[in-house]
Image (tube, rainbow, N blue to C red; front, side):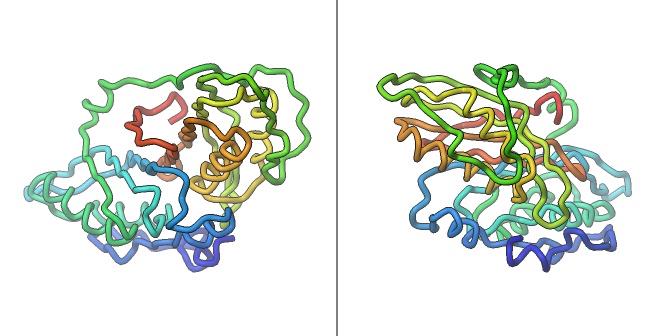
Length: 276
């Protein structure tokens, strides 16, 4: 377990406060998990962000009439902290009975509080249901590897030794799988996700990649660290010209978390998947 997580609201009974309470946000430093992976804030081999989408965002107009909307939050991958997900939910619920004259006022408050918790500027968009509905449901790019006939027996910890590549053959491709699953390191609850690997480098053995991704099935870690581990294991193996790894996780408590890590600056498509 992350040393800070045991002090978070995760896995504990919590009072649901319905008026604005920014102190509910619980930051967790990224540094200890970076250190586990041999990284520091100065040596991160990737760029990226964590997209959080909130489907339970609501507040009151001055008339007392409630508004519902969808919130999109972009946390830089190199921010000093992640925000513990239950505390994020509790904070957002504290807006339910809080009055904002217009959405711009709400956005300003969200940006201030979330940036303070993350330790770096957080992007915020508040979107109407019609706007999000018009975007539809996205499909992941490239080839799905889930139908490969593979024998799998490792589920407890990630197994980078399962990854293999064909030296001498350089290709560029996008692969994806919907079989990613890990567990919350505090509560043990399952985290379900779909993962995309886009790269240019030595050709990756697809069956080995699938077996490797499934080896996360009983692994306990936060979404962000799972994606970073996948990125690093692939980077060490492939030594690619370009690598992007991202995961789209199924929402829990009205929030989904979608970490993106890449060797280059990217502009991700944040449309939801069919499971989201």
